[in-house]
Image 1: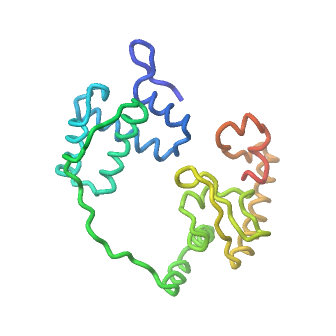
Image 2: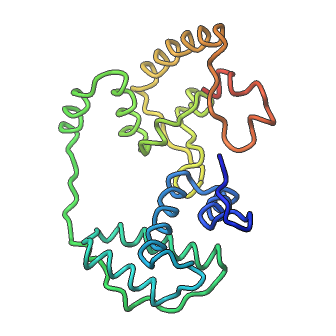
Image 3: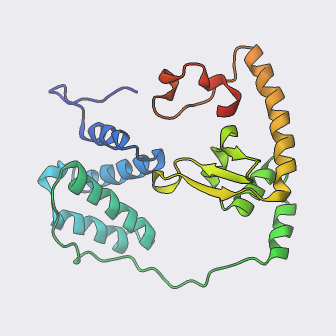
Length: 227
């Protein structure tokens, strides 16, 4: 990654914030979302440096999102979280009250809960190999990215459980592995392992490793358990 610098050779603000977030192991999606809101905040105020801005400018920005762009309440809250992070954690500056901002409304919604028959009908229309992912999401309570990032070593057939690594809030947790998914999951892994061994023979088969594990364990990226 090329670091953008200013005329003095010091990394630009967004690059400094990026480095700050990565040192604290924020998720990539949170990093991207926060940096985008900070950039939009700067552009909204004619590229003035955020150190020169404060509660009044934050309030104006949040009000504009609600009044002019008609964003959802969750979107405005994400923008607020990004700016609170910038000022309170990165700048280590305590902010005053932001009550004057026009808040986007969150209309009451009745939650939609599918019956078991409806879930079975829905899953029946999901084609392989996506069906297994959908079954895991429904049966184990996984989020989409948690299911897609699941590694072989975190599936415990003996205890019938799945270990979710670095879930929401960078926390680990344990969830159940439904009994009816054990056989199709084993069959899937047997098939994938054959493909993995073939890829290794061709000089491929590496996978991304988190943090500094690739330097600590140079061969782990090609090992089966990390796939």
